[in-house]
Image 1: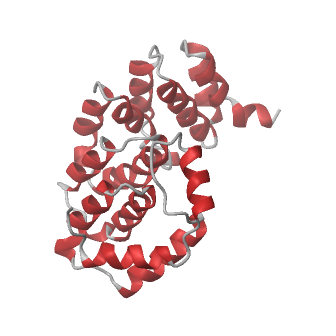
Image 2 (image 1 turned 90 degrees about the vertical axis):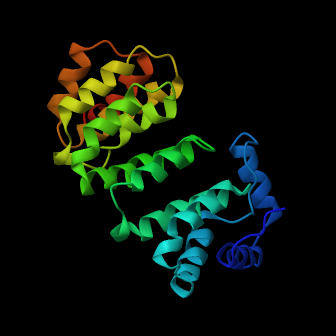
Length: 227
């Protein structure tokens, strides 16, 4: 059995103090029994990890190793912590950081981590290194991996007025005929979120292009609530 780093061992110990088997079982069932859980409420996990990180902040040369170590652990809680560590070290990101972002995206993939990776990791990365945006997101959008396709549609979710609508349009239309639920949902979510910034754009988009019922329904949710 592979030995854990002292960072991960200490984190395990901190979590186990408040672990609850009932919470663990409920979380596992909610995630369709795909992942194990330690048994922590989200707020408790974040609070414990924030304090732990404050007291045990790793060296810069350890960041990627620790993120990947946590990503491989069976308990899903550690993947969430890996994302939090990734964000906490944003000022140290380099152009090649995208390699690790993609690596965690295609391992243990499910909506809970993918959506954070899209909005907060990939989204922030392309604001820091815009010169890499087109090349990488275009490759993701054309990928056979629908989770990477989902990220290509959602990475601008928090961009608001900075959204590249031409790129969003291209990536949505490239996937509009896909039957995958998570892609159809992503299309609707991306449009719904952007409707808060430019309602007219989204209305026009939905009128001009053929979208699945799910995508269209999701896209118009915010707009229809106002009526």
